[in-house]
Length: 373
Ligand code: BGC
Picture 1: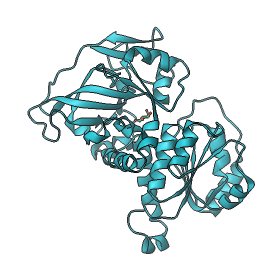
Picture 2 (picture 1 turned 45 degrees about the vertical axis):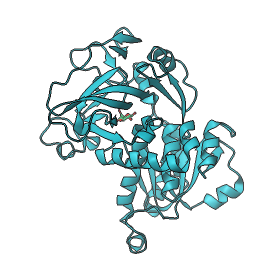
Picture 3 (picture 1 turned 90 degrees about the vertical axis):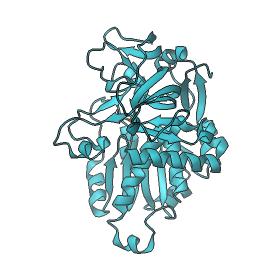
Picture 4 (picture 1 turned 120 degrees about the vertical axis):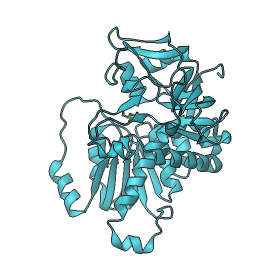
Protein backbone atom coordinates (compact mmCIF):
# COMPACT_ATOMS: atom_id res chain seq x y z
CA UNK A 1 0.00 0.00 0.00
CA UNK A 2 0.95 3.63 -0.45
CA UNK A 3 2.63 5.53 2.42
CA UNK A 4 4.60 8.75 2.85
CA UNK A 5 7.97 8.05 4.43
CA UNK A 6 11.12 9.83 5.49
CA UNK A 7 14.58 8.28 4.95
CA UNK A 8 17.00 10.10 7.28
CA UNK A 9 20.12 8.30 6.02
CA UNK A 10 19.61 9.26 2.37
CA UNK A 11 17.76 12.45 3.29
CA UNK A 12 14.65 11.71 1.25
CA UNK A 13 10.92 12.12 1.75
CA UNK A 14 8.80 10.17 -0.70
CA UNK A 15 5.75 8.06 -1.37
CA UNK A 16 6.65 4.40 -0.96
CA UNK A 17 5.08 0.97 -1.20
CA UNK A 18 4.73 -0.17 2.42
CA UNK A 19 3.51 -3.56 3.57
CA UNK A 20 -0.20 -3.40 4.48
CA UNK A 21 -0.82 -4.24 8.15
CA UNK A 22 -3.03 -7.13 9.31
CA UNK A 23 -4.85 -7.75 12.56
CA UNK A 24 -2.61 -10.04 14.63
CA UNK A 25 -4.01 -9.51 18.13
CA UNK A 26 -7.52 -10.01 19.48
CA UNK A 27 -8.12 -6.37 20.46
CA UNK A 28 -6.81 -4.83 17.26
CA UNK A 29 -8.76 -2.85 14.70
CA UNK A 30 -7.99 -2.07 11.06
CA UNK A 31 -8.61 1.41 9.68
CA UNK A 32 -8.86 2.84 6.19
CA UNK A 33 -7.19 6.21 6.56
CA UNK A 34 -9.15 9.26 5.48
CA UNK A 35 -7.41 12.51 6.50
CA UNK A 36 -3.93 13.05 7.90
CA UNK A 37 -2.96 16.52 9.10
CA UNK A 38 0.46 18.07 8.48
CA UNK A 39 2.13 20.04 11.26
CA UNK A 40 5.40 21.62 12.31
CA UNK A 41 6.59 18.37 13.85
CA UNK A 42 6.19 16.60 10.47
CA UNK A 43 8.18 19.43 8.84
CA UNK A 44 10.95 19.00 11.39
CA UNK A 45 11.01 15.23 10.82
CA UNK A 46 11.23 15.88 7.07
CA UNK A 47 14.09 18.32 7.68
CA UNK A 48 15.79 15.41 9.54
CA UNK A 49 15.89 17.45 12.77
CA UNK A 50 13.47 15.28 14.74
CA UNK A 51 11.98 11.79 14.76
CA UNK A 52 13.28 8.27 15.39
CA UNK A 53 13.14 5.28 13.04
CA UNK A 54 11.27 2.15 14.10
CA UNK A 55 13.73 -0.61 15.11
CA UNK A 56 15.05 -2.42 12.04
CA UNK A 57 13.58 0.03 9.50
CA UNK A 58 15.53 2.52 7.37
CA UNK A 59 12.48 4.73 7.02
CA UNK A 60 9.66 6.16 9.11
CA UNK A 61 6.12 6.45 7.80
CA UNK A 62 5.09 9.88 9.05
CA UNK A 63 1.69 11.25 10.10
CA UNK A 64 0.21 11.50 13.59
CA UNK A 65 -2.88 13.72 13.20
CA UNK A 66 -5.44 11.36 11.76
CA UNK A 67 -8.94 10.31 10.97
CA UNK A 68 -9.73 6.76 9.85
CA UNK A 69 -12.71 4.55 9.21
CA UNK A 70 -12.96 1.14 10.89
CA UNK A 71 -13.00 -1.63 8.27
CA UNK A 72 -12.24 -4.70 10.40
CA UNK A 73 -12.28 -5.50 14.11
CA UNK A 74 -10.48 -8.22 16.05
CA UNK A 75 -12.62 -10.71 18.02
CA UNK A 76 -11.97 -9.00 21.37
CA UNK A 77 -12.58 -5.45 20.15
CA UNK A 78 -15.86 -4.20 21.57
CA UNK A 79 -15.67 -0.40 21.72
CA UNK A 80 -15.60 0.25 17.97
CA UNK A 81 -17.46 -1.30 15.08
CA UNK A 82 -17.04 -1.44 11.31
CA UNK A 83 -18.02 1.90 9.77
CA UNK A 84 -17.10 4.00 12.82
CA UNK A 85 -14.91 7.05 12.30
CA UNK A 86 -12.02 7.13 14.74
CA UNK A 87 -9.11 9.29 15.78
CA UNK A 88 -6.13 7.31 17.11
CA UNK A 89 -3.84 8.60 19.86
CA UNK A 90 -0.16 9.15 19.10
CA UNK A 91 1.91 8.10 22.11
CA UNK A 92 2.43 4.55 23.38
CA UNK A 93 3.77 3.84 26.90
CA UNK A 94 7.33 2.86 27.76
CA UNK A 95 7.79 -0.57 29.32
CA UNK A 96 9.64 0.41 32.52
CA UNK A 97 7.87 -0.79 35.67
CA UNK A 98 9.02 2.33 37.57
CA UNK A 99 7.34 4.74 35.13
CA UNK A 100 4.20 5.44 37.12
CA UNK A 101 2.60 7.72 34.51
CA UNK A 102 2.93 5.06 31.77
CA UNK A 103 1.75 2.30 34.09
CA UNK A 104 -1.27 4.42 35.03
CA UNK A 105 -2.22 5.02 31.37
CA UNK A 106 -0.69 8.49 31.04
CA UNK A 107 2.26 8.07 28.65
CA UNK A 108 1.91 11.80 27.89
CA UNK A 109 3.68 12.26 31.26
CA UNK A 110 6.27 9.47 30.67
CA UNK A 111 9.38 10.00 32.81
CA UNK A 112 11.83 7.65 31.10
CA UNK A 113 11.66 9.10 27.59
CA UNK A 114 11.30 5.58 26.20
CA UNK A 115 7.71 6.14 25.02
CA UNK A 116 6.99 5.64 21.33
CA UNK A 117 4.94 7.95 19.13
CA UNK A 118 3.25 6.85 15.92
CA UNK A 119 4.71 8.74 12.99
CA UNK A 120 7.30 10.46 15.19
CA UNK A 121 9.33 8.21 17.45
CA UNK A 122 10.02 4.53 16.87
CA UNK A 123 6.64 3.57 15.32
CA UNK A 124 5.31 4.05 11.80
CA UNK A 125 2.59 6.67 11.52
CA UNK A 126 -0.75 7.19 9.87
CA UNK A 127 0.11 8.74 6.47
CA UNK A 128 -0.72 5.54 4.69
CA UNK A 129 -3.74 3.71 3.29
CA UNK A 130 -4.40 1.30 6.17
CA UNK A 131 -3.47 1.25 9.85
CA UNK A 132 -3.85 -1.41 12.52
CA UNK A 133 -3.75 -0.55 16.21
CA UNK A 134 -5.28 -1.63 19.49
CA UNK A 135 -8.81 -0.34 19.94
CA UNK A 136 -7.85 1.10 23.33
CA UNK A 137 -6.02 3.88 21.43
CA UNK A 138 -9.02 4.74 19.25
CA UNK A 139 -11.68 7.38 19.88
CA UNK A 140 -14.97 7.31 18.01
CA UNK A 141 -16.02 10.51 16.25
CA UNK A 142 -19.67 11.32 15.37
CA UNK A 143 -20.23 11.08 11.59
CA UNK A 144 -21.30 14.75 11.32
CA UNK A 145 -17.72 15.74 12.25
CA UNK A 146 -16.21 13.81 9.30
CA UNK A 147 -14.90 16.98 7.60
CA UNK A 148 -13.23 18.51 10.63
CA UNK A 149 -12.27 15.58 12.85
CA UNK A 150 -8.64 15.63 11.64
CA UNK A 151 -8.35 18.70 13.91
CA UNK A 152 -8.90 16.52 16.99
CA UNK A 153 -5.24 15.69 17.68
CA UNK A 154 -3.99 19.31 17.52
CA UNK A 155 -6.94 20.30 19.74
CA UNK A 156 -5.88 17.78 22.40
CA UNK A 157 -2.96 20.10 23.18
CA UNK A 158 -5.36 22.82 24.37
CA UNK A 159 -7.53 20.26 26.17
CA UNK A 160 -4.60 18.96 28.18
CA UNK A 161 -3.41 22.50 28.93
CA UNK A 162 -6.82 23.60 30.21
CA UNK A 163 -7.16 20.45 32.20
CA UNK A 164 -3.89 21.33 33.93
CA UNK A 165 -5.09 24.90 34.47
CA UNK A 166 -8.27 23.63 36.14
CA UNK A 167 -6.12 21.63 38.58
CA UNK A 168 -3.80 24.57 39.17
CA UNK A 169 -6.70 26.97 39.81
CA UNK A 170 -7.57 24.89 42.85
CA UNK A 171 -4.59 26.47 44.62
CA UNK A 172 -6.66 29.68 44.85
CA UNK A 173 -9.12 28.79 47.63
CA UNK A 174 -11.36 31.85 47.29
CA UNK A 175 -12.13 30.86 43.68
CA UNK A 176 -13.12 27.36 44.70
CA UNK A 177 -15.98 28.68 46.76
CA UNK A 178 -17.45 30.80 43.99
CA UNK A 179 -16.83 28.95 40.76
CA UNK A 180 -18.19 25.60 39.76
CA UNK A 181 -15.86 22.65 39.12
CA UNK A 182 -15.89 23.43 35.48
CA UNK A 183 -14.27 26.76 34.63
CA UNK A 184 -16.53 27.42 31.66
CA UNK A 185 -18.02 30.58 33.10
CA UNK A 186 -14.85 32.11 34.46
CA UNK A 187 -14.40 35.74 33.41
CA UNK A 188 -10.72 35.32 32.61
CA UNK A 189 -8.60 37.23 30.16
CA UNK A 190 -6.45 35.00 27.98
CA UNK A 191 -3.75 35.79 25.45
CA UNK A 192 -2.86 33.27 22.75
CA UNK A 193 0.52 33.65 21.08
CA UNK A 194 0.36 32.43 17.49
CA UNK A 195 -2.46 32.00 15.00
CA UNK A 196 -1.60 28.63 13.49
CA UNK A 197 -3.85 25.60 14.09
CA UNK A 198 -2.69 25.08 17.69
CA UNK A 199 -3.21 28.77 18.52
CA UNK A 200 -6.59 29.02 16.80
CA UNK A 201 -7.90 25.79 18.31
CA UNK A 202 -6.59 27.01 21.68
CA UNK A 203 -8.45 30.31 21.18
CA UNK A 204 -11.67 28.44 20.36
CA UNK A 205 -11.29 26.32 23.50
CA UNK A 206 -10.63 29.37 25.67
CA UNK A 207 -13.61 31.27 24.23
CA UNK A 208 -15.91 28.30 24.79
CA UNK A 209 -14.52 28.19 28.35
CA UNK A 210 -15.71 31.78 28.79
CA UNK A 211 -12.40 33.64 28.48
CA UNK A 212 -12.03 37.06 26.93
CA UNK A 213 -9.44 35.98 24.35
CA UNK A 214 -6.76 37.97 22.51
CA UNK A 215 -4.66 36.36 19.78
CA UNK A 216 -1.26 37.84 19.01
CA UNK A 217 0.55 36.80 15.83
CA UNK A 218 3.16 37.93 13.34
CA UNK A 219 1.03 38.65 10.28
CA UNK A 220 -1.03 41.87 10.19
CA UNK A 221 -4.82 41.59 9.80
CA UNK A 222 -6.76 41.00 7.65
CA UNK A 223 -5.63 37.47 6.88
CA UNK A 224 -7.36 34.06 7.06
CA UNK A 225 -6.36 33.52 10.71
CA UNK A 226 -7.43 37.00 11.85
CA UNK A 227 -10.78 36.43 10.13
CA UNK A 228 -11.26 33.20 12.09
CA UNK A 229 -10.34 34.97 15.34
CA UNK A 230 -12.91 37.72 14.67
CA UNK A 231 -15.55 35.17 13.64
CA UNK A 232 -15.24 33.30 16.92
CA UNK A 233 -15.41 36.44 19.04
CA UNK A 234 -11.71 36.83 19.81
CA UNK A 235 -9.54 39.90 19.25
CA UNK A 236 -6.60 39.65 16.87
CA UNK A 237 -3.47 41.79 17.15
CA UNK A 238 -0.31 41.58 15.11
CA UNK A 239 3.26 42.18 16.07
CA UNK A 240 4.03 45.76 17.01
CA UNK A 241 0.42 46.83 16.53
CA UNK A 242 -1.26 46.53 19.89
CA UNK A 243 -3.06 49.86 20.55
CA UNK A 244 -1.97 51.65 23.73
CA UNK A 245 -5.49 51.45 25.23
CA UNK A 246 -5.46 47.65 24.77
CA UNK A 247 -2.00 47.44 26.32
CA UNK A 248 -3.27 49.47 29.29
CA UNK A 249 -6.45 47.42 29.62
CA UNK A 250 -4.44 44.19 29.60
CA UNK A 251 -1.73 45.36 31.93
CA UNK A 252 -1.78 43.21 35.07
CA UNK A 253 -5.05 41.63 33.93
CA UNK A 254 -3.82 38.68 31.85
CA UNK A 255 -4.82 35.50 33.64
CA UNK A 256 -3.61 33.01 31.10
CA UNK A 257 -1.06 33.09 28.29
CA UNK A 258 -1.23 30.16 25.87
CA UNK A 259 1.97 30.06 23.84
CA UNK A 260 1.63 28.35 20.45
CA UNK A 261 4.53 29.65 18.35
CA UNK A 262 7.69 27.92 19.56
CA UNK A 263 9.32 31.39 19.40
CA UNK A 264 11.22 31.62 22.70
CA UNK A 265 12.18 35.31 22.49
CA UNK A 266 8.57 36.39 21.96
CA UNK A 267 7.36 34.04 24.70
CA UNK A 268 9.72 35.41 27.35
CA UNK A 269 8.89 39.02 26.33
CA UNK A 270 5.17 38.36 26.76
CA UNK A 271 5.74 36.42 30.00
CA UNK A 272 6.59 39.84 31.53
CA UNK A 273 2.94 40.87 31.04
CA UNK A 274 1.43 37.97 33.01
CA UNK A 275 -0.80 39.13 35.86
CA UNK A 276 -0.79 38.04 39.52
CA UNK A 277 -1.81 34.44 40.39
CA UNK A 278 -1.83 33.63 36.69
CA UNK A 279 -0.47 30.92 34.41
CA UNK A 280 1.75 30.85 31.33
CA UNK A 281 1.50 27.69 29.25
CA UNK A 282 4.22 26.71 26.80
CA UNK A 283 3.15 24.38 23.96
CA UNK A 284 5.67 25.21 21.20
CA UNK A 285 8.90 23.27 20.73
CA UNK A 286 11.63 25.66 19.54
CA UNK A 287 14.60 24.52 17.46
CA UNK A 288 17.79 24.67 19.50
CA UNK A 289 19.58 27.71 18.14
CA UNK A 290 21.79 28.59 21.09
CA UNK A 291 21.19 30.78 24.16
CA UNK A 292 19.29 34.07 23.99
CA UNK A 293 19.19 36.94 26.46
CA UNK A 294 16.13 37.21 28.68
CA UNK A 295 15.33 39.64 31.48
CA UNK A 296 15.79 36.91 34.06
CA UNK A 297 15.70 39.14 37.17
CA UNK A 298 12.41 40.76 36.17
CA UNK A 299 10.86 37.42 35.20
CA UNK A 300 11.95 35.76 38.43
CA UNK A 301 10.75 38.71 40.54
CA UNK A 302 7.36 38.54 38.83
CA UNK A 303 7.07 34.77 39.13
CA UNK A 304 7.76 34.98 42.87
CA UNK A 305 6.06 38.23 43.82
CA UNK A 306 2.99 37.50 41.69
CA UNK A 307 2.58 33.81 42.54
CA UNK A 308 2.80 32.88 38.87
CA UNK A 309 2.82 29.43 37.35
CA UNK A 310 4.82 28.70 34.19
CA UNK A 311 4.38 25.23 32.74
CA UNK A 312 4.89 23.24 29.58
CA UNK A 313 2.60 20.62 28.11
CA UNK A 314 3.08 17.94 25.47
CA UNK A 315 0.95 15.20 23.97
CA UNK A 316 -2.36 14.29 25.61
CA UNK A 317 -4.25 11.64 27.50
CA UNK A 318 -7.07 9.47 26.35
CA UNK A 319 -9.49 11.73 28.29
CA UNK A 320 -8.12 14.74 26.42
CA UNK A 321 -8.97 13.04 23.10
CA UNK A 322 -12.56 12.54 24.27
CA UNK A 323 -12.72 16.17 25.41
CA UNK A 324 -11.33 17.31 22.04
CA UNK A 325 -13.96 15.32 20.12
CA UNK A 326 -16.67 16.82 22.32
CA UNK A 327 -15.30 20.35 21.80
CA UNK A 328 -14.91 19.91 18.02
CA UNK A 329 -18.66 19.18 18.16
CA UNK A 330 -19.24 22.38 20.15
CA UNK A 331 -17.13 24.45 17.74
CA UNK A 332 -18.91 22.84 14.78
CA UNK A 333 -22.29 23.89 16.19
CA UNK A 334 -21.15 27.35 17.14
CA UNK A 335 -18.83 28.34 14.28
CA UNK A 336 -19.23 25.82 11.42
CA UNK A 337 -17.57 28.03 8.81
CA UNK A 338 -14.69 29.24 10.96
CA UNK A 339 -13.94 25.67 12.00
CA UNK A 340 -13.93 24.45 8.40
CA UNK A 341 -11.77 27.42 7.39
CA UNK A 342 -8.99 26.01 9.58
CA UNK A 343 -8.46 23.26 7.01
CA UNK A 344 -7.05 25.18 4.09
CA UNK A 345 -6.13 22.30 1.78
CA UNK A 346 -6.63 18.60 1.22
CA UNK A 347 -4.11 16.99 -1.12
CA UNK A 348 -3.18 13.58 -2.47
CA UNK A 349 -0.29 11.73 -0.75
CA UNK A 350 1.91 12.42 -3.80
CA UNK A 351 1.75 16.12 -2.84
CA UNK A 352 2.93 15.50 0.73
CA UNK A 353 6.71 15.65 0.16
CA UNK A 354 6.43 18.97 -1.69
CA UNK A 355 4.16 20.42 0.99
CA UNK A 356 6.44 19.27 3.78
CA UNK A 357 9.71 20.33 2.20
CA UNK A 358 8.48 23.63 0.78
CA UNK A 359 7.00 26.47 2.71
CA UNK A 360 3.57 25.27 3.78
CA UNK A 361 1.09 28.10 3.35
CA UNK A 362 -2.42 28.11 4.78
CA UNK A 363 -3.52 27.04 8.24
CA UNK A 364 -4.02 23.25 8.44
CA UNK A 365 -3.11 21.25 5.35
CA UNK A 366 -4.27 17.67 5.18
CA UNK A 367 -3.40 14.64 3.08
CA UNK A 368 -6.35 12.59 1.94
CA UNK A 369 -6.17 8.91 1.09
CA UNK A 370 -8.53 6.61 -0.74
CA UNK A 371 -9.41 8.88 -3.66
CA UNK A 372 -11.32 11.42 -1.68
CA UNK A 373 -9.40 14.44 -3.03
C1 BGC B 1 2.45 15.86 18.58
C2 BGC B 1 2.47 15.18 19.92
C3 BGC B 1 3.87 14.74 20.26
C4 BGC B 1 4.82 15.91 20.15
C5 BGC B 1 6.25 15.55 20.49
C6 BGC B 1 3.49 16.95 18.52
O1 BGC B 1 3.50 17.49 17.23
O2 BGC B 1 1.18 16.43 18.34
O3 BGC B 1 1.60 14.06 19.90
O4 BGC B 1 3.90 14.22 21.56
O5 BGC B 1 4.77 16.43 18.85
O6 BGC B 1 6.80 14.55 19.67
